[in-house]
Length: 119
Image (cartoon, rainbow, N blue to C red; front, side, top):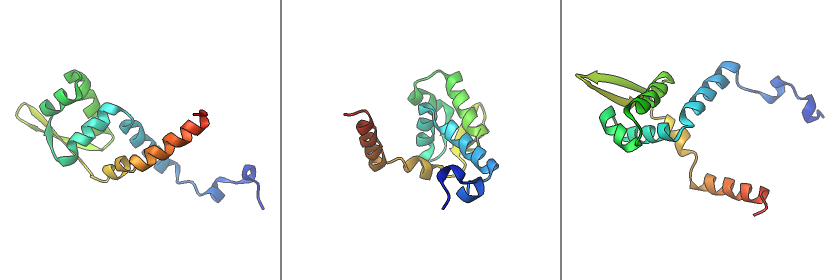
């Protein structure tokens, strides 16, 4: 029987480095509250940036930066219509990741943290 300190990467069956880097990039991009808000807004379909800015309650350049990061990560795409920019989610599977953090998971993690803190 192997001890935990003797396990090799092959025995643990880690995903390949490229897959891990891709997942890390996605989690980094969605780890911001404003970018999560934008994704939630786009859940029901395409929106103009002019509809996103007031809800996010940030300056237009800040919202543009968040949109650019989401687009660079491949989570959303944009199209221009005259002077307006419209955005939509490229693949709704991203909501599977977001929705996995549900009330039950939040409750369980909160309980675990409370135990660790002695509450």
